[in-house]
Length: 73
View (cartoon, rainbow, N blue to C red):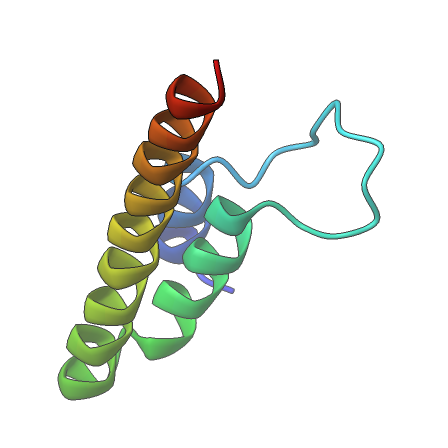
């Protein structure tokens, strides 16, 4: 991995985590894929779209959870 890629990986937070989870953080997965897809612009754009959709759906789930909790009370 070149110096430029290492800087890019560091900028996306691929350092050690305090989490006890055996699974990598989503940001770590994202950084690894972006480094891998760096040479193929179309795949990178598709991956960015998917990551944005995941973020949007997570926000929707959080919003729905809040509404359900408010209605339950």
